[in-house]
Length: 275
Image 1 (cartoon, rainbow, N blue to C red):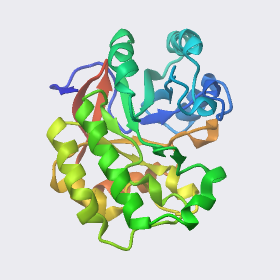
Image 2 (cartoon, rainbow, N blue to C red):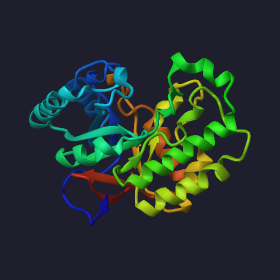
Image 3 (tube, rainbow, N blue to C red):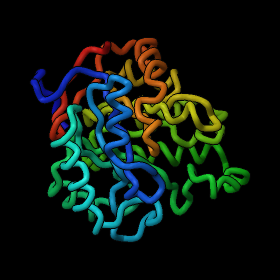
C-alpha cells in the first residue's frame, strides 16, 4: 500500500469501505440496493469487499467459491457503470495458516481498489461465529486474545493487505481480557504501523452483544499515537446496514485525535480530511 498526494480519483470522505454481497452465502440483497442506501445516506463512496475465496476449503460456508469471482466482478462492474455514486471494488481476505500460497498470486491478478485483512479463526475455532459460542466457556480469555493478536502480526507480515478489519473482534460476544488490552495489542500495532497498513473503524460491533465500535477507544487512541491511518466500514450484510452509525464512528475518530482518513483507488491511498 502506498500513500500518495491527493488526486481526483474519488470524492472526499467518509466512505463505507466494508460491505458484502449475497455471494458470501450469509449476506442478503443486491448490490444496487446497497448503493441506493449509500446514496440515501449521502455517502461519497461505497466499496464492496466480499469474503475472498479459499480453494483449500477454509471456512467454505461463509465466503465466495473461486468460481464466483468472475460473477462478483461483473456484478460490481455493471453497477459502477450505471450508478451516479463512486463505487469501489474490493475484497475481505482472511489470514489463516497457509493463506499466502493462494493469496500472494491471486490478489496480484485482480483489480481491487482495497484489500481488507481479517482474522476470524484461532486454529480451527471460528471465535466470532455464534454457532461456536460455547467454546468461550472453556477458553482461557487472556491467552485467546494474545493468540489473536499474534495472528494479526502474521497478517501484517505478509504485506498482502491494505487495512486490518475489526481490530478487536474477539470482544464480539462480550469476552474482554482481564489483562491490559493495550499491553496485549501494542506489539501488534507496532507491527501494523511499520507496514503502513490502516485499521478500520468498524461500526458493526454496535449491533453485536458487545455494543461497541471496533476498535475500542483505548485501542483507537493508541493507533492514533502510532500514526496508524483509518478507514470506515459498516460491515454491511444487509442494504440497510450501509453507513450505519457513521455519526458515532466520526465522533470516535475525532475523540481519538484523528483529523484525516484514507481514501483508496487501485490499492493506492491518500489522506483526506474528516468532515
